[in-house]
Length: 411
Image 1: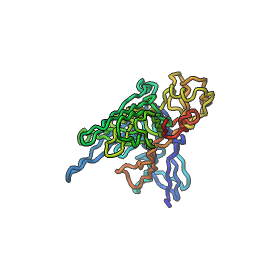
Image 2: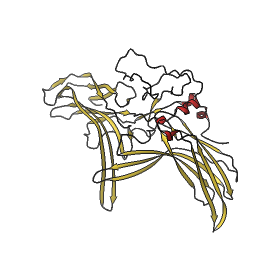
Image 3: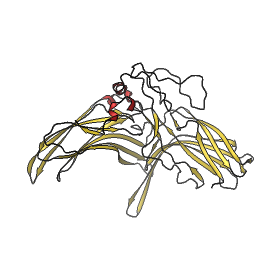
Image 4: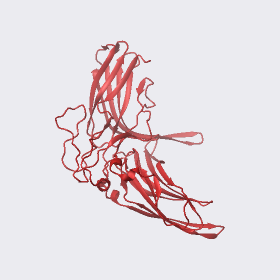
């Protein structure tokens, strides 16, 4: 058991904030014995980093890129050059607060790069190892789908396949893909309709859809270099027997999990796009056909989508986290942090049938799980809490009957 226990506690339970807010919390220390320190130093940092290694024979090149959004260093007690202070044994609590700037990119974690916001507290001890603890909090920057005209556009596409065997034609297949819009938010269903016209002797074995991330990382050292990466987020498939020459449509659907929004605005070294990939597989040795369709993932849903799923709602429950931003464009009072008392009650989120009265999101951990936030150059004595960013997720299940439907079905 450690003789010293340190932790960083945020006043907001989920540790999620928007740019411009005040981050407040406490440094908590439990000492078994008295400690002599110069002071308690706190450093808050917002930064993006990318790093990867390329091997060519026996040589290795490490590519790096970095952006700094803010850095704040201050002492809660003592100072770097002042007299030593003796802290008593027992439970000690030191409140802190940090004002965030505007224009911050969303928190993001990946094994090649990250956008990360951290607070590190250090009990500076003369001639001894320092006691240090580090924690991360999440920034969610508003990505309003209603401000992006392409998000409301439906997707219509087609796929073609000509079959042949030993230069003998075996017919062709055409598939028409339909998606009602191009923009979605976590918690929402992406419905995809696939209509196949199979004029061949080859059978369709499976139709699959998958939501995929397309990432681009930019390094500046030792010189400029770009690295691309892709990842399948979630998928659904239909593989029941298909009737040849059948024109019956197949409906597949995906529920968007907790994910960062598209573009990662305000970050110049990491870019993120989403595509919806449709894949049709065939019997025998014939190659699959697939097509990617651009999708936007936002933090504020399309007003039209909410109105469509929720036409008669009179009351929407209180949020489990603060609103991202006033999405209506009307003047409003900034949402206070939980450590700031206020006499103004929280908005009741009543709906009078106006689609701008959106359901409030909850904040859920990213589906990829927690990451270690301790940098390689940091001391082994730094206690680092595993961290997973949280993203807004809208609960459409109370209003959207499609969410209770099977993942895929044939109509």
